[in-house]
Amino acid sequence: MKNQTLQKGQARLQSLLRSNSGQALLIVVLVMVVSLTIGLSIASKTITNLRTTTEEADSAKALSAAETGIQQVIQSGGSVTGPGSVSSNTSFNTSVATISGAFFLVNGGNVIPQNEGADVWLIAHNPGGNLDFSSPWTGSLTIYWGDGSGDCTNAALEIITITGTQTNPVSNRAAYDPCTLRSSANKFTSVAQSVNTVSGVTFYYTTTISITNGLLVRIVPFYTNTILAVRGTSVLPSQGSIISSTGQSGNVTRKINAVKAYSSLPSEFFTYGLFVPK
Image (cartoon, rainbow, N blue to C red):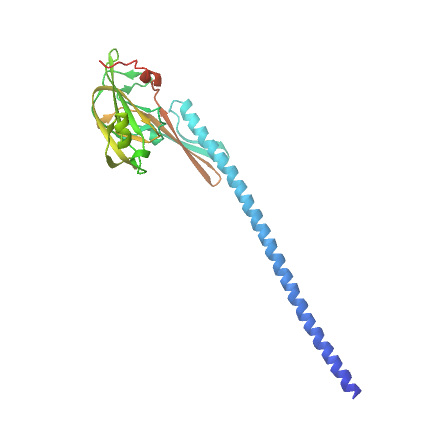
């Protein structure tokens, strides 16, 4: 009887030990899984931070390289373009495109600040940058501006046209406003909405002016900034150039476009009426 009791006790003890051994193994496995998960998470975060830091550094290098390309083109007067190197893994590539044709975005498509305006040259510049008054432009010029945000949230335009000769220039002014409420108060010419696309940009308002022996057009936005485009009935003279520079460092690429426009007349020339209509 005692032997049977002892055997039962030993069997129960062995069963308990096997059960505890299985629980201990399970705990060890769980601890290993948790530790591995935490380790992988830390390693992944470290790799991500390292990659982000590297990309930020490469991005700054690529931007600096693109700026170097722009500076090189400007200093060379546009004669030096193409690939260039800053360091072993940082390079740039530049190109120059002339702003000209029968239609184009004014100032390379950049925003024209209100009350400042931008120039559209109707006479050519010679290679030295001086004005050639021998061939003034004649035709109809259409100006495009505005977006679809609403008539009264878009700019009104003052258009100052300089015509005539170098010794006898004549100034003419006209103003246009897509907002009926404003135009009735400011006495600007009201403009109806007319959607058109120029060089991939959609504009919602246009006006067309006739020009004879044109020298220059100054377009001044009122009330807000705007983007402008123009279209002539014949090819317009060069307005300058757009310098494109792409910098690359590692796997990061950055691109800069810079507008190199011809010198413009000071705003005071138009504000104080040094060109007087005849």
